[in-house]
Length: 434
Image 1 (cartoon, rainbow, N blue to C red):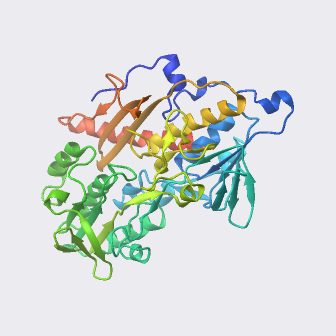
Image 2: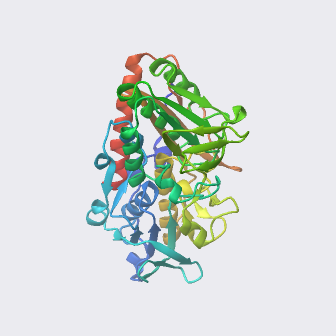
Image 3: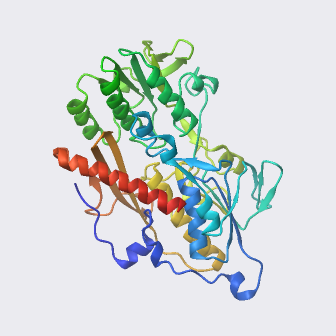
């Protein structure tokens, strides 16, 4: 596996991986602190990896800035490691995090309400209950929303029968219960979407961990992946592992072999593929097309495809000045829609906001992404990348950096990768919510 290159002090300062370089940022003395003017106000909408990281980072860079985080839920259930819940290797409480440290330790004002509107001219955010929050800068990190009926028949009520589980929590628990109730010999179907979508390797990690559960508890059952694509992230590593760990259990059908699902019949648990074949499953997981969270539309920062174009040096919207968009909702260039990238983007956006409010310059950022996938208990794989901004946006063009796990690695290497994945999860959640 290619390892990340050694980082210089300057690259650490500008890098934005989980925890990278934050200790080197010195808290700024804001204009308000030095002139006696009113405090600058930043509102952050969305309390996932991107939003929570942005709020915390601004407070660490400049404690004089007033930061308000708007998030309706009092707890955040992470999509990372939610597939382990489906496989029976974790439970939901172990991937659930609260916002106490953000408010008590870092001084972030947390408002548990839903953001319902943005007025870019007045620079205000309206939240449920009628409260209006003024801002000098706004950061949106609303994650994804499902494109209901983008696959005909898959509407919101259909998700109660054929769960997507692409927002962790109640949907994860529902899919887990369905797997537990599955009769041995039943067919599980996963419908994977076309790009772009949240967490490119996610459907295939999910298939792997469900396969482990089936192999252990329902050994006569099979798993079918119907895919709207002809290739997917870390494909060679996944398919090699499936051959070793789950021979004959997983079948992957790409778009070119009629894997694209074009309609759904929820009551019958039937998926219809592009050329008319009908696939009936006992448990059906439909991962539908997605878009930026609704508040991004309300703020006017999305394009006709439903995602937010941004300036990758600052993550400021290319459509509405004064609003920054990070995480799954933005168009991230070559970066994947991953939790690690969300935290990286959030740190860059936070630094850009602090610089803008203090009238200081911002160095060109670099970004790191690391993604671990667990294919079975004690069997992990990973991919890492380092990105920089160029004339076209963000590209993975740092020489001799990043890479994927070697295909010919032995069992001990895979076991260590699984352990590293556990450490990655502890580190990123502590960095975000601790």
